Figure 1 (cartoon, rainbow, N blue to C red):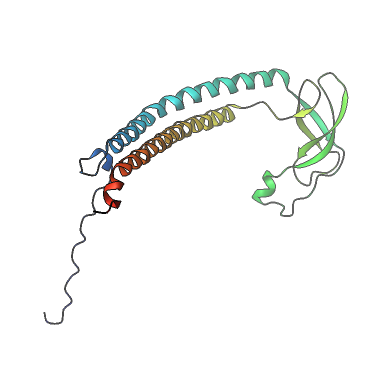
Figure 2 (cartoon, rainbow, N blue to C red):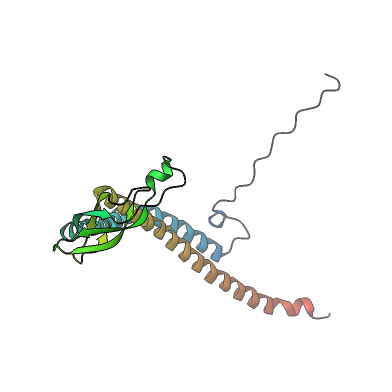
Length: 206
């Protein structure tokens, strides 16, 4: 139809640049090909090593924290404590944040040896003086955290596995960076040598 704007031309396919160092082209140097193979090899090695690293490190972490939890269960004990003062009030009583918040409050309890002790424990907001709470104590009679439970052990093992995976990929990236720098310096030296041979022919007057 007259006056109708013609459709825009179809976008041209962008040139493929992935793995250009491994493709044939007249400007590719031996160092480019070597760098390409190093990068490809490191990618494949990282992909192959990641599952093994995650499993081995995660399993080792699980055994490690299981032993810690067992030791904590043998050396930590429950005790009944009495608040010696009112716990602080949360600025937003009844909120989800208030349910998770704990305030340090002075308490008195009897340790596993029967000795009365005074310490500071984390207490729910607005608990009045004289309230009774349960605390965990160690062999020295100090208030401490409860032993690790199975969910905490699994969480720490998973975190260790994730860190191991990141470590594998970080190591591969560092190795590739070092190899690239070495090859780059090699190229600079080769260019300097080539220019030293070519420069006199360009700068000498006829």
